[in-house]
Amino acid sequence: MSANSASLDHAAEPPWNRRAAAFVRRFAGAALNTLYPPTCLACRAGTEAHGGLCPRCWSEMRFIERPFCERLGTPFEQDLGAGLLSPQAMADPPVFARARAVARFEDGPARTLAHRLKYSDRAELARPIARWMARAGADILAEADLLTPVPLHPLRLWRRRFNQAAALAREISRQTGKPCDLAALLRVKATPSQVGLSRSQRAENVQGAFRAADGAPVRGRNIVLVDDVLTSRATANAASRALLRAGAKRVDVLVFARVVTGA
Image 1 (spheres, rainbow, N blue to C red):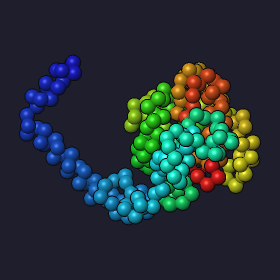
Image 2: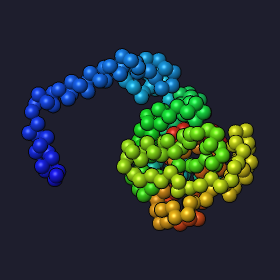
Image 3: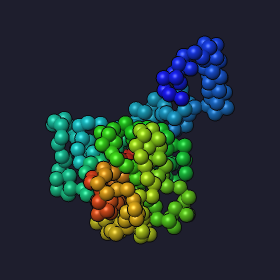
């Protein structure tokens, strides 16, 4: 059936039928809200709709907006013009081209949400978080050929049974229509947790930890690497380096939250 004939069929649909369908949708939504009242994603206070934050948590979210460093995505205190780089980006350029993040990680609801998604297997958080990420990374997503998440080592994935980066990449792909390959990048070295390590220790810890999968469709493509949190850049740099060695044209990084202090 052609698009024109489909639209004609829809136009010919009786008005009472469309009204009935709309009534069913409203009834189903009301029933869902009665059984599962909408609550804030961060503090669980009552909200008007599912998948959002209450006014207090929204006001406490430290969203990252321009002006920010075009390479690292870290916010500037003052607007000095477009396209500027931070001193950190010039002194220690990242392997990836650009990073974008929704909010600061240091405190507030962003930290709470990131921890719940990562450690509590709150998979339902992936959809609203991905929606914010798609908005924050609109400029790099517009040029993306492929999304891929930062992978877990198979042993860690077996123990945790959940990779938050993969859940976010899948949702961003669904919302933006950009293709996603969850297996384009492999974690080939089981590394200890990065928590508590210094910047140099983090970089050493993930050295050689990643490689592109055999036959992964990355050569000549603009890749957006998806993760939940960006801290010292060690993991993002190591993963980006593996993709670039496999022939990727460019690697950008998109995360939900990022550490700004000392970035």
